[in-house]
Length: 356
Image (tube, rainbow, N blue to C red):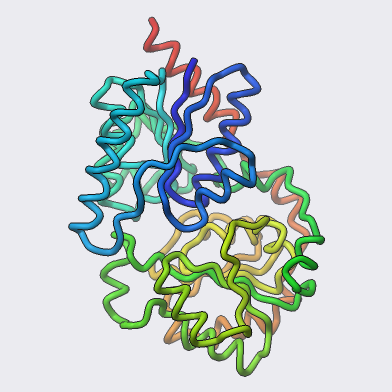
């Protein structure tokens, strides 16, 4: 059985790497596709998993996104018609989902992002099945999706790669960092479709400037910054110089999260990863994030500050009191469902159903 996996972001690359390993252990063949974007391809290198780079990120404009997607579809079509996979798995990738659907390849989608409305509209109706966290159930139902095609699990996807993870403190020496004396910052995904209206409120490549100024100049903590786009990289590099460390390649970020004083992100993934390891973590996403609320209710040290401009003092207070929020979450982590077995099971079930 040949399983086609697609990953468009760093988080998806982590997830697909774990899925690939589980499928290979069950004697499946794997085809992995990705695109040129962010730290994504480097993660496959870290996990020694061959991935075929097809196309690149389309950028901020609607025209750029559409053109890139259409170009990727053609290239994916040419690749997939040669390899002929039996089933396709992606985290709601519009390009690969459209190609798989057109070639009658059964599609299994993974998602925890009801807020990504345009992408969901382009992908979920084409899928045979969708796997999502149980905490997002009501949102999918209220949006009118066929809930019978969903398979829910009581956890978050990040459990797949955090549950048995053991952080390596040696990474700190390589980066010149000291335990609990640095802050991880990941800016917002400003050019994503679901961020565009909020992003129009500010002209800089990231809305974190005021916060970063305070951390660097007043709190004097070291910052390790993970940009999403080139303009964010150059802006931060020019503004702060050596006061901010910016890795150019993918690193063992999960170990760095484990020993950070705090994790701050304009998205949610590294906040979830950090919180699952007991590190005080803050998401500045402008809307409610169901997975973050779910983990907070469970007792994990994760915080949602929806407006970083108006509530900058709240973020600063959490950073300054971080040692009070850090906790051993090993028992809590065991209570969360790991969806890996569900994903693998549904891959085999989809393939068997098509053969019958």
